[in-house]
Length: 140
Image 1: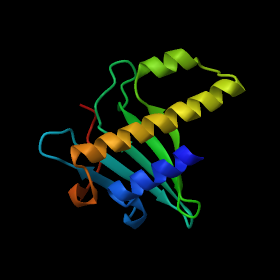
Image 2 (image 1 turned 90 degrees about the vertical axis):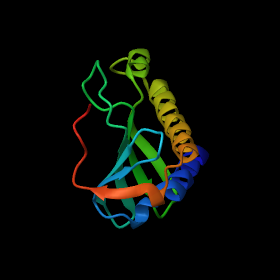
Image 3 (image 1 turned 45 degrees about the vertical axis):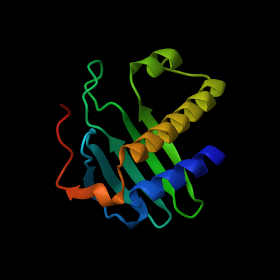
Image 4 (image 1 turned 30 degrees about the vertical axis):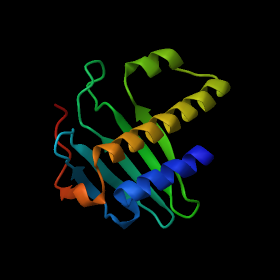
């Protein structure tokens, strides 16, 4: 749970999602890739988010990297419910992982999200660079 709490604090310092309305946002920095944050749903104690660069994965056709995150505002934790860092992880885990593998997968997703949020902060992404947009672009 420590990693989930760290992800919450990184995410809330970076983009302050608890203050955002449902919709799409883009963060642009001078010499980096645009980051897209979509607030999918707001509930009394949780937020559902999607974070991506919107680059097309050649194998799946979906965005890569991307993470779907559930933010528990009352517990101050952020859980990566689904991540797509690339095909390598999916090949390693297989289609029906055993219980031990599911735990390992969740830890890998949490670690991936943690490293990605740290990298985004280092690149200069922040609430100040976040601008509301109409929709996410098609994956390039």
